[in-house]
Length: 245
Image 1 (cartoon, rainbow, N blue to C red):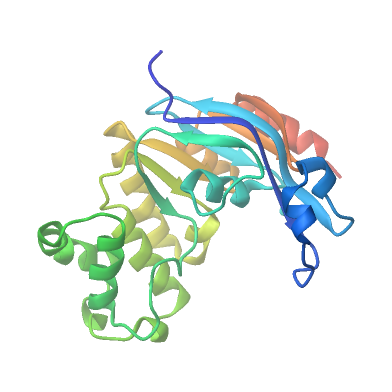
Image 2: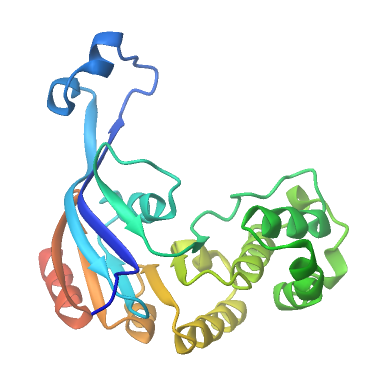
């Protein structure tokens, strides 16, 4: 097997329940275990796994178990408190519909800005612009400020931009659930195309049908721990058994 697309080793990240709490200088220089405060909790702890290029991984677990946090760590949006994440190649993240978009800028301006922030050259943006707008079904809203779009329109625009990136790893969170059924199916066909092209998919969803459509392997997160890393059918069976009734 070649170099993994994603390598996660003993990953841990900690949050504070009381955001107003502050750490002292002594806390900052103390060890990780000494720094833990009563109002802190580990969103993820001791998580290790690897993903090979071209794999499609489904991440399952109840709300608040660390799924979206894991995607943000892989995307580099968050930094871990313990362990690390190594990503071989760039990521195309569809994990927050508002990420990178500016409310007062128009759809046209946001496409150019966001695509540029993700590393697309001006020439590439120009050549792909019409396709992005067509896919997002926003031809009549090109000069509309982003903040005036509906949530569904924002999802369409975000997916249209991200799916045009040439990065080898695609991160998809639950955001597609906001879109209407017809557009969601359109997005899923696009994901099928990207997978056929050899892309790697990291997919978070509560929808078993969607998970089974794309993924053969699953990761089950429970209370911030990796409970099971196995074929998707086995992971879903374990997950459903844990929360039956």
